[in-house]
Structure formats: C-alpha cells, structure tokens
Amino acid sequence: MEKIYLDRNENNYGPSPECLEAVTTVTSDVFSIYSNAYKSGYKSDLSQRLAEEFKISEDRVLLGYGAEDLLKQVIQTYLKKKKKSKLLIPDHSWWYYKEIANEVKGKSCEYPLVEGKDSYEYDIEKLLEIYKNEKPDVVFIASPNNPTGNSISHDELIYLLDRLGNSFVVLDEAYWFSSNNERATELVNKYPNLIIIRTFSKLYALAGIRVGYALVGSKIKRMKKLSNRYLGYNRISEKIALAAMKSVDYYNDIAEKMRNDRDLYFTELNKIENVKVYKSDANFVLVKIEKDLMSPLKEFLVEKGLIIKFMDEEIVNSHMRITIGTQEQNRKVIEAITEFYKSYTQ
Image (cartoon, rainbow, N blue to C red; front, side):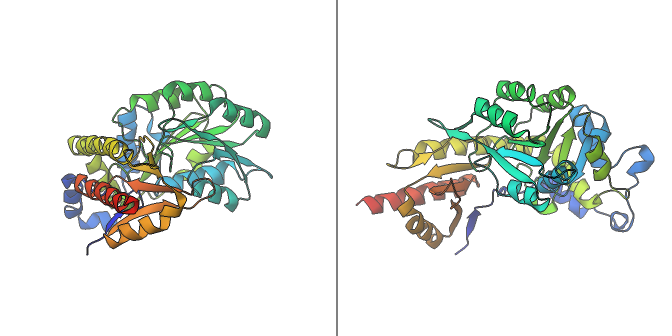
C-alpha cells in the first residue's frame, strides 16, 4: 500500500514544470564556478529578483537555508549579545522557536493565542502587557501560525508594530499563500526593526532545496552583515527558485485548490460530533478531537496508508494537524475520518 504523508506540511502537488526544466538545463559551470553576481553589484541572482519583486534595495533581501536558518540567524545575532536575553513567542507555536533560544541560553517568554468560535486569535492587549513586563530583545509573530493556522490581521499587526519599537520583531510568514506582496514592502519600509521571513518550501513545493529569504527594515544592519556570503549561494537552488517565481499561474492554481480544500475540511469534519476543525490560512488544518480517540484513530488511518500529525504537546494535546494534500488525498482523509466515527458510534 502506498502511503500518503500529510504530517509535515509539505506540498504534495510538487513544483512547477518550469522548476523541473530548470534542473535539466543546469550546465557544468553551475557546479564548478562560484556565482558571478557580485560583478553586477549584488549578492545573487535570486536576491536581486526578490528585491525587484518587493521593490526594495537588494541589500535588504537576505537568503538562507530555508526559513529555519534565517530564524536561527536572528537569534544568533540579536539574542546572544547579553546575559538573560529574552525571546517573546506565541504559546501555541513551533517548538523550534524555543530550541533556537535555548541554544544561546536565551529565555523564551510566551504570549497567548486564544481559542475563538472558529479559529485561534491573537490576544493583542495581553501580548502588549507581557511585552511591557518582560522587555524582550526579540518578538516572534507567526502569521499564519503553526499549528493553529490563524493569521494576524493587517490592522492588528500595525497596532502591534507601532508599540514594539524597542525590540527586533520577526514576522514569520513561512505559510504565506497570497500573491499580494505590497503589504510586505509597506511594512519593512515603515518599521526599521522588522524582519519578514518567507520560504520556498510551502507554496512553491521546494522544501528539499532549502531556500528561504528575509526582507528587513533599515535597522537590521548587523544581521545583514553576518548573513552575507562572500562566495555566493547555491546556484542550482537559486536557478530552481527563480523558475518557481516565473510560474505564477501554476502556483495560483495550487493556492486556490488548497483554499477550497481547507473549506471542505472545515465543512465536512465539523459535521461530526465532538470534532472541531479550526479555520486556517495555511496549508494545513488543526482538528480537535476527544483525547481517548487519538490512538485508535491514528491506528485506523495508518492502516489505510494515511499519515497525519497527532499533536501531543503541552497545550495542543488532543489535536490532529492535517497537511492539505492534493484534492484526491484530502477526500481520502475526510472519508476515512468520517468512516471511523461512523463505526465508532455504532
């Protein structure tokens, strides 16, 4: 039986044909010769292309080995300078945030995400209260957030950024699925302490080539200096990422299919008693179930070759996080979960 993996938020549609073509047209010099981008006055072809996309200077686009590398660079740069430095993060968030703070012996402080009627929400005032008390060096805001899937609204984000000027602020947008880039440009131009991090792993289905990028405000000088690579970046990965950026129609189609299937999960699984699906803006949905059904449901799905993430963390411990796969895969998951509950209640 072929297994369907929907547990790591990968994009099962795969990259665009242009990305695959880019691999087949790689010439030997891409392997053996360092990048010549410096001769044109910029770090790399990819950072220059991203600068054009976001209408900012190329020196304000930083490349990394995926978004996780850039998150680590932020912490290594701005949380390590003094003893008892602090990182402020959402209480429902990726475990990696705490891990990278621990690596530099920094302290992680948490602000709450609250469960609303249909989705999780940022508790803005509580965040600001904790911010004033803790005085963190760095603040992480994830939008959409993993594992809850909720985003912060533009108005709420502006309200926060206007009040977080004494810290470096990271807006982690690894799960950003919109083609509207004007907002990012507006934000990094307005807020000098802001770092927006995105990746080619999720929407672009390029997790295996590990390419992430950051857009930074004018105050982010030390990280800019430390992130520069004198000999350039991986030229093959750059070539593939550039091909992805050209494949607008292909990825817009995938984003639309994912939006439709998020709605399908929300509609269909919420029909089941004692199951709650939260609205999501990411390529996954969070589903709350009865804790004593976690193990039998997982076993039932595995027998059908369906591998999804069963959460067993401190405050997210009665939940499934289901990656949005292809339309066919999503329907198999919905049918399987529905079948399980029908057999369980009989």
